[in-house]
Length: 299
Ligand code: C5P
Image 1 (spheres, protein in one colour):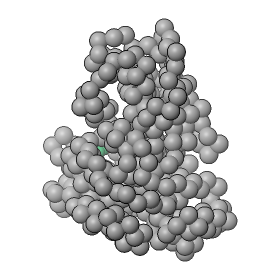
Image 2 (image 1 turned 30 degrees about the horizontal axis):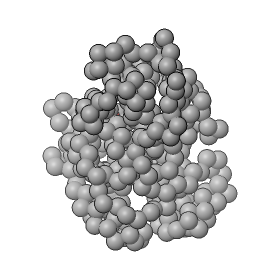
Image 3 (image 1 turned 90 degrees about the vertical axis):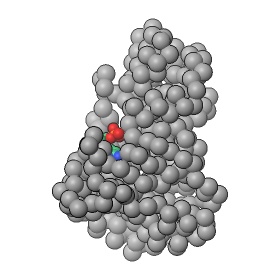
Image 4 (image 1 turned 120 degrees about the vertical axis):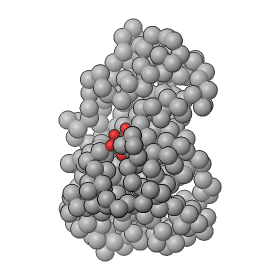
C-alpha cells in the first residue's frame, strides 16, 4: 500500500517584513506563488518510520538534512500524535526543488508528508487542523498545502488564496551554497533597526497580478530580505544584473535566498534568459510557470 504526493516550490512576489515581534518572528505581509518545480513524496506502509531521499542532478545530496530532525519525519510524528496513531511508514522523497534556497523545498516536503500520511492512514484530518499542524512545523508550510497564489500574514502562516488567473514565466538560478533563513532575518535586524512595526503592504503586487501584464508585475515585485541577502552574498546582485541584461523583466532574490528568480515576458523570453545565464556559466538554470497546485495526490 503506497501513495505519492507532489508539492511545489514557492516564490514570494511580495515580501514585506516588519520589526521582530516579542517571540522573535517577524510580522509579514507576503504574496506567495507556487511554481512548477516539484518534489514527489511516496509513503509506503511499514512497521518503522524512516525516510530516504533521492535528489535531481542539480542538488548536492550532502545538503539534504537527514536523521530524526528531517522535516518529513517531524511532520509524520506531529500528525500521528494529533490523530493518536503510531508514527510508522517508509517515506521516499524525490527532490527537484533547490535545498536551502528560499524556495521552501523543506516546506513542500513537510506539506506532502502531512497529506500522504493523512490519506494513506485514512485519518480524514480537517483542513483547519492540517493547516494548524503545518503552521506548527514552519511559517510557510500552510502555503505549501494551499498552493496557487496566496497572501500570507502573521509570520507568514495565515494564508488567504488570491485571484491569479494568468500564467507567469519564471527562471530560477539556485546557488549550491545555502543561506540560512534565520541568518538572513538576523541580518535584516542589523541593517534595519528602524524597520516599521507594520510590514510593507502587498497591494501593489495584488493589483499587478490582476492586470496579467508581466511588466506591471515586474515593477511591483518587492522583497525586504533582498538587501540583507545581497549584503551577505554580494554575488547575488551581479547575478540579478546579468539575468536582467539577458532579457528578464526583473530579477529578485527568492524569499531569504540565495536562489534568484527572474520574471520573463513569455515562454520565449524565459528560454532566452535561461540560455543567456547558462552561456554565462551558471550550471543550474530552471524554468517554470506559476501558479500551480499545492500538495496533491498524484498516484
Ligand atoms: O517558521 P520557520 O521555521 O520557517 O522559520 C525559520 C526561522 O526563520 C525562524 O526561526 C526565524 O528565525 C525566521 N523567521 C522570522 N520571521 C518569520 C518567519 C521566519 O524571523 N516570519
